[in-house]
Image (cartoon, rainbow, N blue to C red; front, side):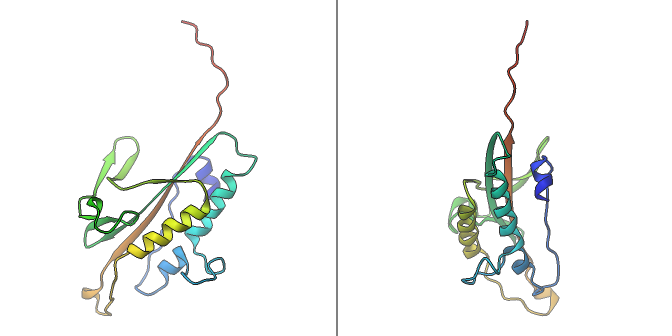
Length: 165
């Protein structure tokens, strides 16, 4: 997945399953003191991306941005903004750019320099996730989707060009 991301492909990792089956734990890991041992797939991927970004083999400008949102009761909430901010008043909308594809209008995006910054954003975002009580009767089950997104921009140095007009 990481190799393809560095080749310029869009990559998506999705966890789907029954309530209580461990999707959040698998994706994000535990909040316990031993986070390295109980680290989820997303933090592991982010750590590996920064290992690649900082490797000597990679040349060019590298820029990593993240966002974190939750879709709950058909409303999009920005998990990286304060709960009472304008972005979390139900005003975020899904739009589609003709070239770049779908995006969330108004969703905050933060540039990050290292994996430690990502860990802090994940921790802060997780504190904002909806508190939920899940009943075993399907009509009372609350469906909540959390989406953590990262964008890697990698610009390769260009050779000199000569334009003759």
